[in-house]
Amino acid sequence: MKRPLFIANWKMHKTAAETQLFARQFEKPEAFSCGVVVCAPFTALHAIAPTWFGLGAQNFYPQDQGAFTGEISLPMLKELGVQYVITGHSERRQLFHESDEWVAKKYHYAARHGMTPVLCLGEPETVRLADNAQAYCALQLEAVFGKTDKQNLPATIIVAYEPVWAIGSGQTATPEDAQEMCGHLRKALASWIGEAAAQEALFLYGGSVKPENIETFMQQPDIDGALVGGASLEAADFTELIQKGCSAGG
Ligand code: PGA
Image 1 (cartoon, rainbow, N blue to C red):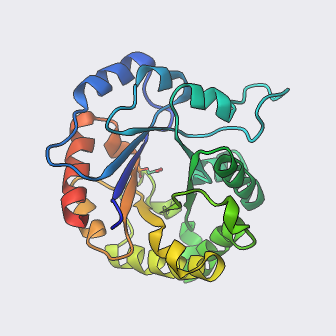
Image 2 (cartoon, protein in one colour):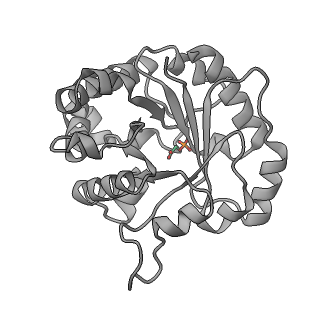
């Protein structure tokens, strides 16, 4: 039985002091059996000790050390207790020009180094309007899993489907569209890594997820959790969201 997973992506929000405050307010919900991960900014990671939830980073550079001014390596993150790293978020693809190839390189680098990568993908609005979203997202998935050596896969495969137009916009995909996409991507994944591994993979939905809409997403058979931006910034909101999502999907 898969455990639903809720990941907070704080983006460029919260100082270390604000993070400490969040950590004090963020208590484990009662009778709680889901996975939770908080992806804080680099400078706040030391301020949040992972306990009942996991710690994630939003980015890293795929080398252990070297002349890469301004970059952060996995050994640096591991030292702070980080177990998860986001790869392929649409903001990094768009604002920092990260290509499918670069995302795949980072994904496999993280997996080889014992981290759990969270692969994000999703279509821009023009692609959705042209009715081409499934093919577009399947190509993003193929770039990572299409030619992969199964031995190099992480123990837990996590794919977050985040339509670009839904991120931070207050507009979500319909639960039915998100289900259709995640079901399609799971099938595609099965064709590369096998049915059993694809069934075990966690597909998350992301894009304006809130306590008010999480349940309808979690009721979909191929949606195993959520990647949450804005609604993860306040401990009370995020707690309510994971509590509702966990009971709806459990
Ligand atoms: P949002 O962000 O929940 O604020 O839409 C989600 C994300 O970018 O991961």
